[in-house]
Amino acid sequence: MNNLFKHWRNDLPASLVVFLVALPLCLGIGLASTSVEGVTGLPSVFAGLLSGIVGGIVVGAFSQSKIGVSGPAAGLITIILAALTTLGSYEAFLVAVVISGLLQVIAGFLGFGVLGNYFPSSVIKGMLAAIGITLILKEIPHSLGYDADFFVDSEFLQQNSPSIFSELFVAIKSLHVGAIIVSIISLAILILFERPFIKNKNIFKIVPGALVVVVLGVIINWLFQTISPDLYIGPKHLVQVPTGNENGDIFHFLKFPDFSYLTNPNVYIIAGTIALVGSLETLLSVEATDKLDPNKNRTPTNRELKAQGLGNIVAGMIGGLPITQVIVRSTANINSGGKS
Image (spheres, rainbow, N blue to C red):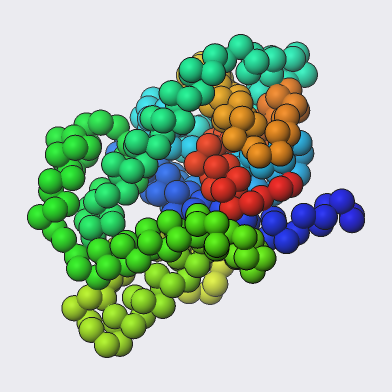
């Protein structure tokens, strides 16, 4: 137990930052998964949040990765949408998620985690560079106050605009002064927190810059609402967390697999696809996070596949989306000083 809380001074503030990064991503991925017509029992936005909880608690408990963070991944959205269209039922899709988890557990026991050792460094660096470029391009419109498009819509050809680049020009025509002010102050704080005279202060080793940015952003927006309503960033620009019904019951969000679909061959094809893509994405993220880890910890990849598989089994059983280790949230953990 002492070892569990040995690095709490590092892990507690890092966990807060990861939470603040993961929350909108989980909600956005859940929302994107609801955009299929003709499917019975579609998931709610809560499905993405549920997978984030399972990824943090279940996968985190069984994985031996020191700094890896798991949850629903934007890279699986196209597979999810295609699977829902093919199966026509979210309950059938959940059966595929459970089976994909079983396949990952089996792959872990058979030693397929060793495949992660054969990814060239150029692939890892290319993946990280591509993710970084995508993050920058996708966040510029939001920093200007244009929130018509979701972050998880990461395809070059967008739903609301011809392309990612043309969307930047659309955003310039929809400027929100309050959002721009908050963005500039936030970037200035993040840059300031990287300066040696700030990083070397003990207090700022406990309180990461990203957390300061979020808290200060909330305060500034509250001041806008009180002092200058024209600058106020309204609800349509904010993260909307799903709530329970009028009785406070959140369990009505839960959905369960219908195992009568086990006779449908498409379920097994989709399960294999989710297991393969999810495992590859996890192994790539493991290699990347191990390279970024300043403490140079090495993650046992077979154990990681088993943990991811167990997470997908649990997520599928209670209505969640597929889970992988994700590089953006893992990087946030590393940059915020997470140790264990």
